[in-house]
Length: 347
Image 1: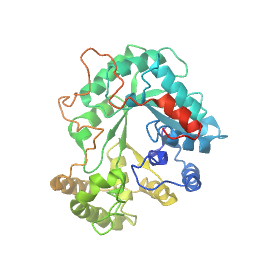
Image 2: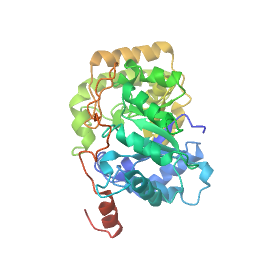
Image 3: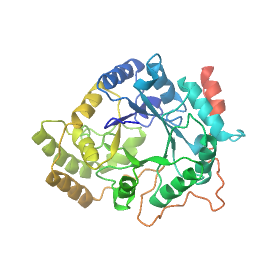
Image 4: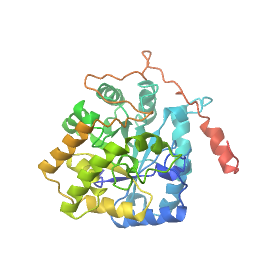
């Protein structure tokens, strides 16, 4: 399967409060059309993004298009498993495919390590021998967990095709821990998410114009605006040399590092920025200067749902020695939520 240089993320399309105000579907349709017109056809979503809302919005835009004209990347999120399901993987994938009116996914991720490696084994068992098996990836896994997942998948005639981790100028732990090199050595695609740190590295926000109060991202990044302004000034300086906007530089940096960045898009301009970023050629000196400055600032933006990747396989705290999956901390009754939404009720 051939991927574009950039994947587009539909997390914000779930309207779950992470990014602030609700998004107008009409605006998102324009975003979608602009992306597809420019060859950006890889869409990353998850049931967890608004409890199916992101998937439904994306599905509405995909309806009627040739199936080979787009690539859908979706996720199995352990915390969204309904505790009453007898076959959680079958139930979850069936629900997601129904929401999106699809017969298959192109890429399917194990969203995090809650209950791993048990859930990895369950997903592998489900797709063992199936002709509609998607490429399997893991997200928010450290190096030891990545190797373990690949071993489990191979036991079932599958293989690990992709890794998706938080990776940006202020979080390069997937690089320092050896994950990027391992993926390169083994032909595994590395998808970098939060390259722009939810807009913190776009040049749009500063101390005088912080992120929207009340949003989840504001709680993380607004207290860091002083240091972020220093880094954004450097990004702006390099952007001016290349005749592009500040936001295009972190995207171009991620591509230059051999990763496939997932860029969250909620406006046409963001898509246009992504398209331009694919053509920026950063020098090694520019890359080194950005990385050195970012490292010196010591900004910690590791979020509550993830862990910092460390060399040696540390941070395996969400796994269980018996290898059995658990439902996760949230125990979200996904089926009940979906039924209530279909009736227009609130959970």
